[in-house]
Image (cartoon, rainbow, N blue to C red; front, side, top):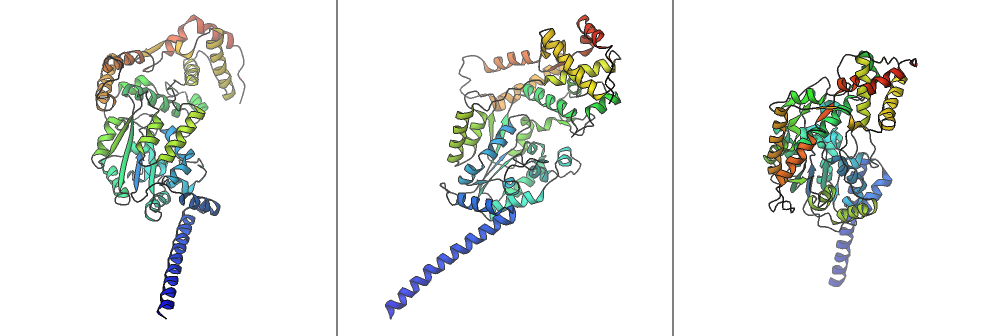
Length: 450
């Protein structure tokens, strides 16, 4: 009887363990379903999670804060491409619960801006107005830590907008759900960052999501530039602190730059890592996926395999040439040299200008006459560039070339101060005989009516 009792007890215990395991699996399944609503994907995610090969007892949070114009898009695109490998390594992302295919609309995709803006308290702040906070994504993020006991990966350059008390709110969101938090920022030299940021803002200024239609601006004929004037913007930022606001909603905020953003995060987070964008010895995204994300070997391996197949992820910063020709057309229109009366006519004129410069004259957009920043502005830019380089860029052992790295950077700065930190002198271009010939040839052509 004792033997039978012992056998039945063991059998009941085994059945109880199986029942508990089955119940927990069902709870996990329906928790996933609650946040996703895609039954087929839920089964797929549970299958992937069952193959975890790393220790998930310690939960990590990795938050990539940008800043803007430092290769964030590449990191975010690969986070979507490698989402399955990240999941195998124990990392999940809130957007994957809501937008499993990386659906791109209003920020709800691999760039997790609609989580970042939840920590911006001012509802009138530009980023929060453009990309309102999505509390459902915040809840999905918490569920990753609480319900599934997973690590989390967040990436949004809008995190560079957070002021000190908003960084504190992010800290409260992450602690104590995740055991270890790593903040990752990318260093780009200040003068490079300024030129790239300005180029982007100028392009944005011509698009409908920040301003009226481009043709509408032509009709209004009320501003000196279609985009932003680099000279006007930078002439207004001595000392280079705070923000410069023009006639668009999005301000040019220097508080977003790494030199000012990182100290705000270091006040609350003990582990703030910086990737040097100018370190040519390793790919920026490789550093992120292989060095910055703890215990993610599958992700690192998959990333390197994809890069070996597809090539480098590096992207060179180039001035947008279509902006130059649009600005030249507008300058001629505004000065009464050439009247553009219809949108179709504008497009034809821009195409004709580009053909004339690049085919007839065999020149490029870089061959126009440029006017550059005054020396006092350049001195300010260099001072901050040198300070940031000492803080984030220099390696303790030097650059390995045997040359002074600051002297090398200074030479690069001097070169770019005569190119990237300049803008076309449209008055000078329009006075040349070369372009008089162009306008005389094209002026008789009647505009196409809209």
